[in-house]
Amino acid sequence: MKSPAALLLACLFLSSAALAENWPSWRGPSQDGSSPETGLPEKFSATEGVRWAADVPGIAASVPVVWGDNIFITAPVAAEQKLVALCYDKQTGKEKWRTTISEGSEVQWDDKSNLASPSAVTDGDRVYFLFANAIAAACDFNGKILWKRDFKETHGAFATQWTYGSSPALDGGKLYIQVLQRNEAFQFQGKFDKGTPGKDMSSYILAVDPTTGKDLWKHIRPSLANTESLEAFSSPVFTTYKGQRLMLISGGDTLTIHDAATGKEFSRIATWNPPGEGYNKFFRLVPSPVVGDGVAIVCAPKNSPVFALPLDAKGETKPLWQTEPKGVTSDVPTPAFYKGKFYVLDGGKKVLSCLEPKTGKVLWSGELGGKTKFESSPTVVDDKVYCINFWGEVYVAKANTDKFELLSVNEMGNGTKPNGNAASVRASVSVSDGCLFIRSQDKLFCIGKKVQAAP
Image (cartoon, rainbow, N blue to C red; front, top):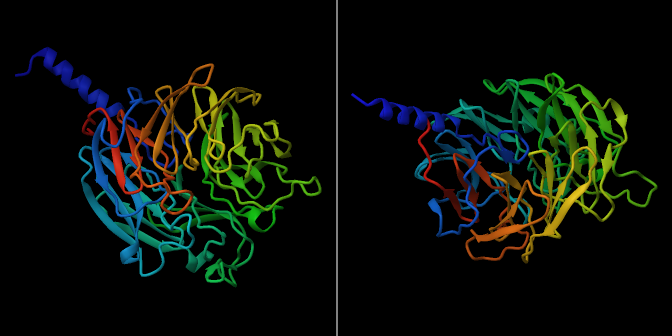
């Protein structure tokens, strides 16, 4: 019979394991790039501080999604012309299963990315995968396909010039698919058909029954934007404010706030791309919105300002604030929110900034350095900001502080020096159970303390 002390120790162990935070979607448990986990490492490398390293069959921008002892990613298998869903064991890195979701067609359309860019999402019961060819599937935790759909058949192929990369989202018992696209079918680079002639090419948000894969509703999202400005690679973000569950959508030269249950639009920024003012450019949008302290922010493209919208805004409105022209900006990385502050990464200039939510005041900015861009999004946890660049170098800066401080630079890549092509590292860092999960060109790493088995 166990002693009282041994029983107490066992209870504490189980409690610790039960409290281990999952990373269920591409921006984590709070959909803001942060986690309450602690004890995360500051210094590491591909050979130091590694719990395990697993081979992956192909590089992609999709992040490691973690639930219990399972890590889910998507990947292309170019030699077999397959798009696959994979599950790895969090304890050992062993591949548990590999399920083919799509095969017999291209896995890459352009030289910058591939069709496995969207991240998976899980509710702890099923895991959902979406690929840029508009094919989605739900799997159980053993890799069995429960349903599969080709959205081209009902809604048309996704009409984005560059490869579609929006990740699916779960909220309130619904699976959400965001498609912000050109309003007509077209051909890309003279060989790839985008959109489907004869289908309604309006931008939309689709709510799907996660148990069956059937449509629940489709909300058309209008925009005054033109051509490429209609396109967005952002993902839906959900939050509760004053008892109302909200959905936020960025793209089409605006940020909109909706009723999460029905898709009804409550408010929007009039535009960040006004005609006749010398700016009106046609650029796609990449960053998703992020919410903090009753405010949502969105980064307009190509070195444009960051714009803020209060969550209780109504109708078409001007921004609450915006950053100065040529000031704090982000073209690709989605900002993070952590302990009352926004963290914005300018991936081109390699500058990290900390902003006050209510006013947009820049509390500090600092240069990360390095010789290549960041297009992954910052992850903030344990008073540290983790940013990974094209080469797989992880820069760690101090968070929750009154000045910029770079703590370390950690080599996690395979030694090649890709520069914005499909071999570049774009997957953000995921966090669970005191460990970092880092996807490089050909590896999935678990960095940190020994992970505890899920209860």
